[in-house]
Image (cartoon, rainbow over all chains, first blue to last red; front, top):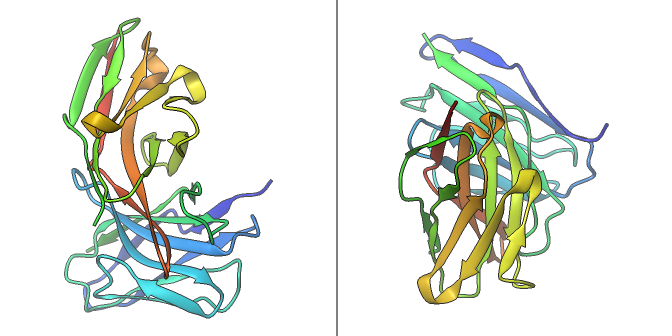
Length: 114
Length: 115
């Protein structure tokens, strides 16, 4: 089955630690995205990538970093510089290259900082 | 910048009643608009999208939405609510830039369905 996988589903982190969230897709999509979801705030774009080895900051990139070394993978690192990292993180992908294309979402990772 | 506003963070209806979830958009160009649904602790699933082909868009699970340019609205409706429709619904607008296609989401509407 084609789709997007995110791991782990739940993640706990101590303050001051960096943590990396995994996102893999086998849809052969060029574009990939990371969103943060907080109650009552909808989804906010952290980073996005339209092609391998290239990525752009979204609306709330501070305290996060990404890489796009392979087409199917777009890992997100939450660094210790992120002041309030507890949230639900969603990865998405699309065919890219066009306006108005559907984004497909993974099941999400819930990060809790202890 | 494009934006969407969803009126009503919580909506409650009885099973079998009409569902109406409101979305208004702001866009300087003809927009691409989407409705997504999210069940608890899951990702988002596309319900329907507007791409200017027709103003009345039919989606999955009996939902539909009508694009009204004069009102800058894209409200989501379903004639008869089912218990399984209880979820959170997000309206989104697509913005194309040289760096790629971006979605801007509304803050969401949580739909409760009463037996």
